[in-house]
Structures are given as structure tokens and as C-alpha cells.
Figure 1 (cartoon, helix red, strand yellow):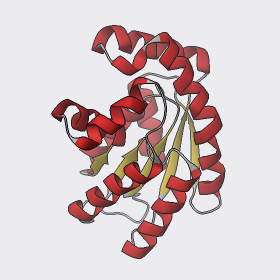
Figure 2: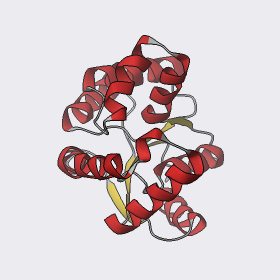
Figure 3: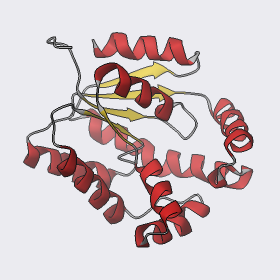
Figure 4: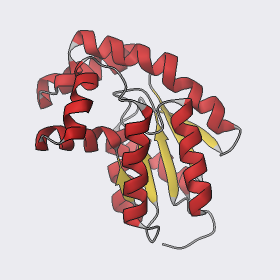
Amino acid sequence: MGGQGLRRRLILFGAPGSGKGTQAELLRQRYDLDHIAPGDMLREHRAAGTELGHLASEYMAAGKLVPDELIVNMIRHRLEDDGDAKGFVLDGFPRTVPQARSLQELLEKMDRPIDLVAVLDVPEEELVARLSRRATEERREDDTPEIISERLRVYRVQTEPVLEYLGDLVPVLRLDGRGSVEEVNGALVQAIG
């Protein structure tokens, strides 16, 4: 598992439906990384009925982003709890420039810099089709047509600027996310080394 080119602290970036979660899970298995997905963590809190879950569900039900402070604290606790023995892949975080700044400051203090940001580019029409399929298959509350439209709008307005911010600090690799899961994963693994 060693090797000079191995990227062990990764951010997977892309719009809702781009395949981040699937690819992050495959990277977790291949490189024995921690898969840190705030969206999944929030859904777990919501299912468990925690205070964070109640707060988050109001935002998620409307397709809005959960406030930065809540997300950043959740990620900070997770990174502190996990240590850095295995490295990590962040899936769906950071989603705003303030979150990216907070993450950068936190990782500098922990001496755990991000190695690579990998962006899964998928055209919007395909994202809508994927999210609509997922809504039917998984019965996800946050994948209704209205919420899908709002989530994609929020991504364009609030999340895409994060790439510009991170691009000044960390290598950013753009990948075509339209291929099969295996094709996208092959390109990602080749880039990671």
C-alpha cells in the first residue's frame, strides 16, 4: 500500500448524483481509508432522532445546506476521533468556501494536509436522471424533483466556488463522471497512484 504517489487525504467533489458516495466507498475499500460523508452522517443523526438530526432535517427537507458551523464541528469531531493512521476520503465536504477555510485551518493545526481534490464532472441532465432513479430505488426524501432542482442550484451557487478556493491550495483533478462506476473508478485510481 505504500508508494510515493499514494494520495491518502482526499476530497471527492461533484454535484449531487455525480457518484461521489459510490467512488468514495470504493476508495475506502481499496486504500483502507476512512470514508467521511456528512450527508450520510446527518441522515444517521436524523434517523436516531438526535438534536443535530432534528436541526439538519429542516434544512435537508428543503434541499438547503446545513449551516457551516454544525457541519464543521461534526467533521472536526470525526477527524479527531479517527486519528490519521489510515487517511481519509471526504465525500460531500466542504460545500461552501467558509467550510473549506475551516477545513484548511483544522487540517493545518492537525498537520494533515489534503493531497488531492478529485472532481467528478457530470452534465446536469444526467444528474437529474440519476437522482430521479435514486429517489425511486432508495426512497430518499431529499430526491424529489423540486428538491433535486434546488440542490443543483445550491451546488452551482455555493459549492462550485469552493473549487476555485481549493485550487489555489491543493492539486485539483477533474474527471469525466459519465462513465460506468468501474471506468470512473479506474481513472480515479490511476490518478491517485
